[in-house]
Image 1 (cartoon, rainbow, N blue to C red):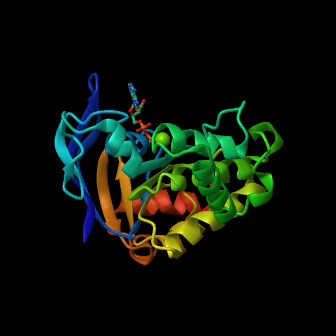
Image 2 (image 1 turned 90 degrees about the vertical axis):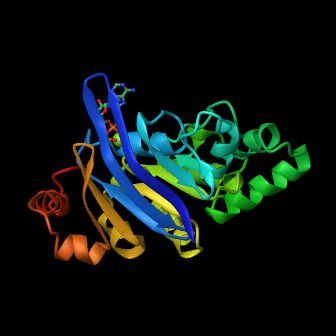
Length: 247
Ligand SMILES: Nc1ncnc2c1ncn2[C@@H]1O[C@H](COP(=O)(O)OP(=O)(O)O)[C@@H](O)[C@H]1O
Ligand SMILES: [Mg+2]
């Protein structure tokens, strides 16, 4: 059942300990949310999982694969672990559809027609069938992020990582992206999401992990963390979040 196992991960940059003994597990179909102050190590944790950076010690397992082993094929791993970025990372000179077909052709080896069909299906899934031929500059931030999600989905990953997917968006565009994420969650996608969107966390998260100074202070289901946090630090942070302090 376990899909992802993060075991005692340490990571430093120079003298700074960015991750300190981080451990957690996700079952297939779980949606976990990572929260914590800026600089607490959230992005670094995600980046270790798809090997955009390497751990110093500890292990990360995806099914039976030791992600952290030097011999692990990073390109294969990144097909299994998709990532959605805060700033979308779309190619400006490619249409929405072409942003998706690119990886399908290059990485998955699909022919042109097959890639186009698959990309169109995934654009439809995020409600953007009509925008297939639009360039990123012709799309709103919310639409661009939905293309980013469709691109990640098209690779049919086992796990999707989201790094603050709505924090670059104007407030009125957050909802359309959160709705797509909630649909994916309901559809059984395994998702590890760095986000401070309380509505999403409350309705979709199985567990929330509160990270501070590179350590998981506390983990638990949303009702537990939000209503009965065990640590003052968690309570202070979440209370600040509810009053809009971290936006
Ligand atoms: N490539 C890097 N080189 C040096 N320091 C880094 C690097 N990436 C992150 N850091 C530092 O690690 C700490 C945690 O960063 P990060 O994981 O981005 O936190 P968060 O996503 O929670 O804001 C920060 O102090 C940041 O400056
Ligand atoms: Mg970050």
